[in-house]
Length: 152
Image (cartoon, rainbow, N blue to C red; front, side, top):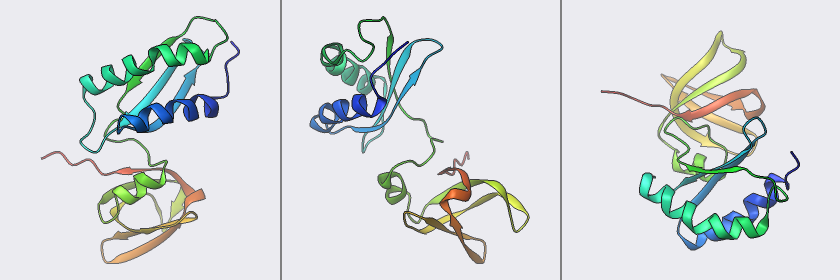
C-alpha cells in the first residue's frame, strides 16, 4: 500500500499534539495490517483517557491529510511504554542522572548489557556511570537504550 512519508504525517500531527501539551514520541506505519500507530507522552504520563482524547482530536484532521490515499487503515494511539528506547533529545534530558539500561551491538569490556546512571550525553555519545567507572559509549554502538525498570 502506498502511503505518504511518515515524516510528513508526523510533522502534521506534531502541531495538534503541541496544542494539547502532548509530546508526539513516534509515528509508525505497519504494512502487514495497514495500521498507523501514534505514540504519545505527557509530563504526567499517558493513560487511556489521554490516548482517547488525542485519537478523537486527530481523527478528522488526519482523514483530511489522507495518509493512505483513500485506502482503508487502522489508526492507533498509544503510550510508548515504560521500556521505550530513547529516540529524542527530550528522552535523554528527561533521564539524565537516572538509572538506564544499554544493550550494545557488540561487547564492550566483555559486556553487551550495561546498567548504570546516565551521567552525560551528546549527539555522538552517552556517558554512563556503572559502578565505580564511567563509560563513554558511541551512540552507533548502542542497539537500545532505555530507562531501567525496577520492580520492588
